[in-house]
Image (cartoon, rainbow, N blue to C red; front, side, top):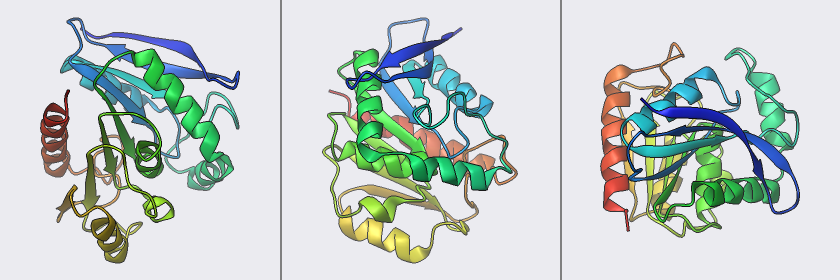
Length: 221
């Protein structure tokens, strides 16, 4: 069984943020930093960390809203509040907090995996921080960061029926990241990989996870 704990991370500017960590009961095959949706560190995100730990990864979820308001765990109906919190985040602060997460993992095989808002931030961070791989699931703010290129292999997952991400946005992603794997799931909408939301699509989520795990294996040092 994975060992799970909440702890504190210290960023280089003196900020302390909370984080949730799940560790495998065998030597880790790598580290995953999970970047949350606009709803914060939810029960579903914790379960996701535990799931990755069960398959061999040490997983950390940094509370990226802690600089704005601590302990954020919103209901899925609180989208306006979640968007306001995301809008209030400073990009350089996010990089500092994610670097603290990388330091805490202390592994030479680290991946950023983000969902929704976290997907865009995973892409942004992969352009600035030293990690082995990055993955974005339906990253809603990707167009803000597409003037940059990641420093590592990057993988994208989109639902074809996602009302929050247009085909034009996916085309922009493809144009800038021509060497990346970009997967589109025809029967899936937004948040298709979140089993706690009505938009969950089990078959697409399972296929996306298999592609993610295979990808992380290929990018391992």
